[in-house]
Amino acid sequence: ATGTLQLASKVEVTHQGRPVKMLNEIEYVTPKVWINQWHTNWLWRVDPLTGICELMMNIQGLHQWHGEATPNGIGYSVEALGEDKLLVTGKLWPEAFLLHIAPSDLCGSSAEDASGICPAAPASACRRTTLGLASAIGAA
Image (cartoon, rainbow, N blue to C red; front, side, top):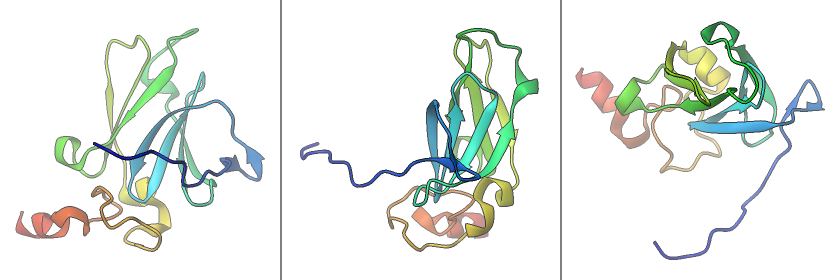
């Protein structure tokens, strides 16, 4: 690929008006961002336009970790995992965990709200019309 990468914008991630620090892993689930907070059991659903944490999820019961073996992996793929699942793991963890998440929790109230979203953004439970997912779901 050719071209130059440039920072388009950035926002401070906040929860209840306070900055959320030590953000580590990030996964885009159109139109939201899921972020792991390093050295904690917290996953955050964040609005990428405002930086506001809309939902926090505690994954404490998945794996007993210590020190640097912290949670640090989030994956999402409609094609590989299904539209309502997040894959989570951690550094030095022997396994990954597939979490079934209701679209309302995965997406928040903005499901199907296309304002401010790139038309080429990947499909998700939050944005079924992207990449023909609506027709694929209807055909199933």
